[in-house]
Amino acid sequence: MYTKIKRESSEKETQKNLKTLLNIVNNSSCYRCFLSTSGQDLDFFRKLKENTKVNLVWNGNLKKGILGFLLGFIPDRIGIVEFLKPIDEVFFEDTLYDCGPSTVSIVIMKDQDKIQNFIKSFQASPVPDDFEASVLKDPYALIYTIGISDIDDGINLEEIVTMTSFWVDRLIDSHEYIINDNRNIIPIIVIDSGNVSLFADIKDAELYLEPDDVKQNAYEIFNRNGDLLNPIILKKSKKFLFGTFVKESIQIMPYIPNINNKEYLLELLFKFCDNVKKKTGEHPIFFSLMTYFISSRHHPLKELRGRHVESIQFFVLE
Image (cartoon, rainbow, N blue to C red; front, side, top):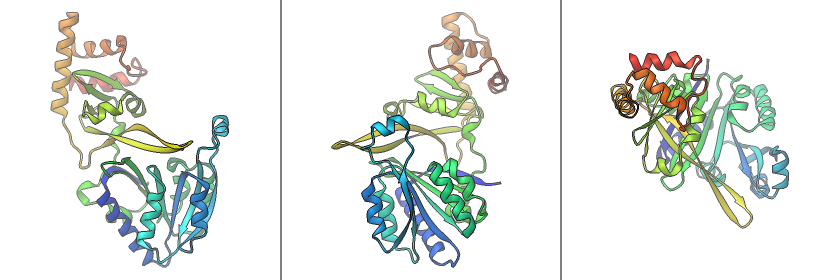
């Protein structure tokens, strides 16, 4: 069983974790440290190839389909770089930030045979969720993924994936340790100026949220248990012709440590149902809440009449 921890981290905390990783790798005869990155131009990898502090393991073009072929001038090369020991801390951090405001993964492994599996898997797909299984065949491995969520505030999105408590104990304070990802306890409940929207999938909820409204703290987001969830703005830049295009998206994250506001959420839901009664003349809590969103133009809960109904009824009436 592996552990996957996602959290929001300050730039200072991220730098502290990077230093911890380097100290462990530099003082070990077995560990090897790799950087996997995508969305780079050819010049990025050419410079690394000429640098004696790294070994450019592999780089190539990302498979982008027909649209990617037509827009081939957009930098979209992927690659794996191994940092040679002893790893220089300043050079290490500079290389990470040179990757730009996007997601990069640091992979640390011991098992030499399993490293080749990781390389082949990354070549097929540079997405961490796709290549993590090949990395975790090494029971001592770590995948430490960093995504810059807000360039101005210096807030990073971190994901730690490992099979061993060794890395968790060194990168996560004991009070921050989370075993279960509470974002998937559906429905996801979004409160927006008194309006309530329910989602059967975390991705649907993320697509519903608007970055400008997130910046204005317009939303309150909960799972079924009343755990408060945190919408984070992710920014990914792409060089386009003579300028840079920045795309914003939303990722919903748990708070660490967890914040449970079940009573407050129930209060909001009861208030919402009272407002529905004033408009419709009907008051059954569960019925009002469900029928409103079945007929609402707001994004309704998918498959509402199926397996998700019981979980919502349990939550509202409990």
